[in-house]
Image (tube, rainbow, N blue to C red):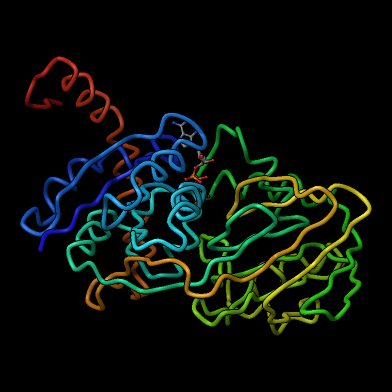
Amino acid sequence: MSKKILFLINPVSGIGKQRTIEKYIESELNKNILSVDIAYTKFKGHARELTGNAVGQYDAIVAVGGDGTVNEVASKLVGTQTALAIIPTGSGNGLARFMQIPMRIHKAIQSLNFFREKKIDTMRVNQYCSVNVAGIGFDAHISHNFEGKKLRGPLGYLQLITTEFAGYQSDTYTLKIDGKEYRRKAFLISFANSSQYGNNIHIAPNAKIDDGLIDVSIIRDFPKFNAPAMIFSLLDKSINKNDNDEIVRAKRVDIIHPTELKAHIDGEPVSLGNKATIEINPLSLKVIIPPDHLIENSILDPIKEIIPNIQESLNLENIWKLKLMEGLSLKKVTK
Ligand SMILES: Nc1ncnc2c1ncn2[C@@H]1O[C@H](COP(=O)(O)OP(=O)(O)OP(=O)(O)O)[C@@H](O)[C@H]1O
């Protein structure tokens, strides 16, 4: 029986990979088994609104964007029979990377044809839903500053991190992790459902997304000259072995803080006031994962990912020509 899927495309995510999505939907999707609708988001929160209206009418809603778009779609799908699918066109794509969804979008679209479903945990952070990683401290500081930045994509994050790091002051937090008290001066505290923020930066290398547990990764205050070693261990999936990091697995975390807790939820900046509760919601979301043969795990994959990005950037002029011609109902693009 054919499945109904709705693509929700965030036109401002990442560096613009989504501009080619309609072409690939046309060429890669098996229309004998999938019937497709497409909508573009027009503002922050629109994907959440559109998903709320569509849930139940579709077998899957496809978030075309980064973790912010994924979060908006997922938060309306938790506890329903409609699955989340992801075409990663964001800056970090943490959940997509963790679920081994191909970063090349034509491959990600091909994987929808197999409609392989898996149930995953989600987290509740006060009134918000989080599917990937939420946090307080330096990562939250970065997400609050990233919003509205012109330079997006991984380079935008890198630029911001380098400028903000030197002046950042760690804070002291009191947490109750499954009822046990921890008081830590921390550079950041992450609540990880998947292992990574995005861009293969692994804050909780052994996190499992279907174990009913949050990996609470506490990076204690550290001398700034240790930064290169910290960065290396985040990339090397070994932060859990670093002396400045402590990971505790839990079902629930409570925080009371003397000042406003600035946080991020899947990379999106939020304020939690001065009280936060983070709880796991086990196996509460269906996600479409790729079939084994489409999982990209060769060491050349990052290079394969970069080349189309460069090509796409160089082709931007062509894409604008295409858009213009679409407007004029013309068929062919000439250089
Ligand atoms: N048409 C739009 N105009 C402005 N903002 C939008 C629009 N559609 C969606 N948004 C918002 O854009 C923000 C960024 O989207 P998203 O997180 O998907 O991409 P990203 O930040 O580049 O990737 P990542 O989260 O993986 O780093 C989200 O907060 C989303 O709500």
